[in-house]
Image (cartoon, rainbow, N blue to C red):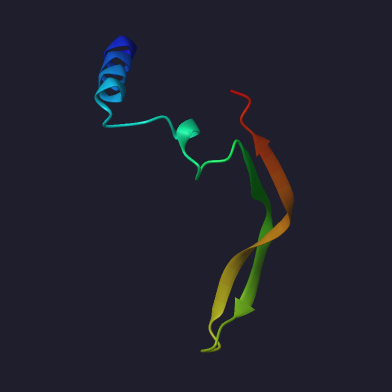
Length: 65
């Protein structure tokens, strides 16, 4: 199954229908993502209680390919 998928992906790459995201200016090899903390409850404009996730810090993810 893996070889079939690999062959199909290579065929689409050669045809120019798909491209590697590493060639895209929109994709960075370094991403900063929030580390989630616990849950907190806040009020919105309608005085409804809304549960939200708190961010306790940031984590850097680096793609070393």
